[in-house]
Image (cartoon, rainbow, N blue to C red; front, side):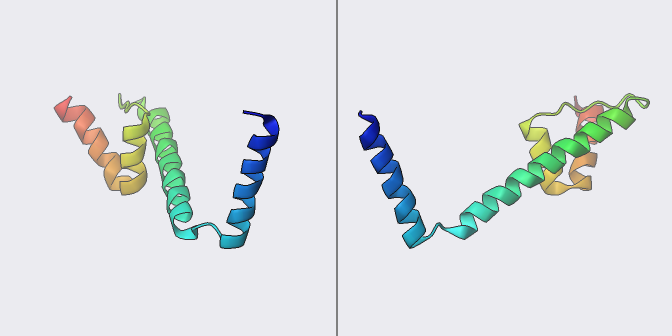
Length: 87
């Protein structure tokens, strides 16, 4: 496609969003979910940093970050229990 056509389409979409407005609630929910996942990864980082003396290590990935971010401290404890007793 020609660059003029692509720029025109993108400009039209931006203009449409400015006139109609973006749906705020879904964007806000996605943003809050991403922040919670990042907080979960931070909790896991501190657990691994301070838990190394006790032999605790929970891998930091999307699944464990989501569990610890959405459930908070109880989710972190559940991950520790799963790591210790089940795996």
